[in-house]
Amino acid sequence: MSFGNELKAAREARALEVQDVAARIKIRADYLRALEAESLSTLPERTFTRAYLQNYARALGLDPAPLLRDFDRLLPQPAEQVNNLKKPGKDLPRTRRSPGTGLLGGALAALVVLAVAGYFGYSAYQSRSTLAASAQDSQVTLPSTRQVRLSLSSVPTGAQVYLDNRYLGQTPVADFPLDARSQATLRVEYGGRQTYQSALDLESDRHLNISLLPLTAAQLAAQAAAVKQAQLRQAQVKQAQVKQAQAAEGAAASSAQTSVTPGAATSAASTPATQPAATQPAATSATSAAAAATSAPASGVRLNWSGASWTRVTSAGGRVLYQGIPSAGSSRDFPSGVTVRTGSAGLVTATVGGGQPQRLGAVGTVVTRTF
Image (cartoon, rainbow, N blue to C red; front, side, top):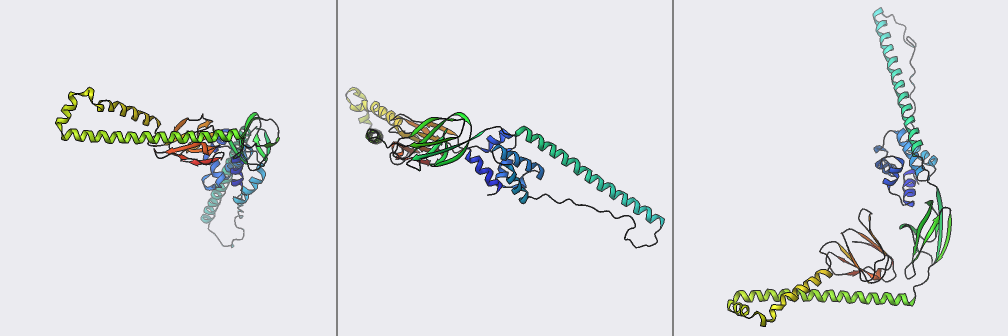
């Protein structure tokens, strides 16, 4: 694996964003991305880039030595060019020169010597300045975070493991590197099993073995009842929408009839108390309000929960918009482009852009979908 892939894998294993590391070690985020992509043409000169690679590796808890060797193979140090100046007159044919020619040649040789001395002097000064700046950056940006290791197995195997809502992978998890801290929240999920969640002390290495119990009959019955309740609510919403459409058609037909027969409109106006149509607008208004309260928005995504199911909603940019366990019968609206992850997909329905509600999956199944 090249040094760029190792940097990226180590950062993602610690669930860190490039901006987080850049703020910690005071190096531009685009430079860190270029190091991960090994795009050396977009980085500063070699001395600075090498120092940045060393600091980035240490910030991720990696040994920088093998990464620097990989970097040196990819971008080797240019060999020093040694200019051997020949002595005046050496290896030159011994020809008779005029005094004017000798003076001119001596002047040119002196200019060449001065130019070469100035070039090497400036190069030495620039190298000292670069090394001093790199040393200062190294002293300032050395990370002090202590690392611990987490190992976890489960029965059954293949469960999803989360630490502080960061996905670590499926069990078994072996020697996963983490920043030491006094308390973290561990969550383990498996379809058709009870979710395990507990506080975890990470001051030292931890080795855990967790048994995930099957859902009880009461829990399965509660989920089934919640599904039926959700289906009933959906039927009520559709019924309200049908009534609203019928009321709108009736109002349009009544308006057309009134415009054709003014006499009938006059008769209706003379006896408003005896006409059932006089109460129809109020009923239509109430039906419209109920339908508006329960119908999904014309754009975006509405989530409905028919039972308790842990859910996390993140934006297209990765920001967490919602996370928790909503109560049965609740709903929330989100913009388009969100990613929804839920622990029991059969208890969650999504309505996109005012369309028909769709269930995210089966009861007890962990599902991740983007709308």
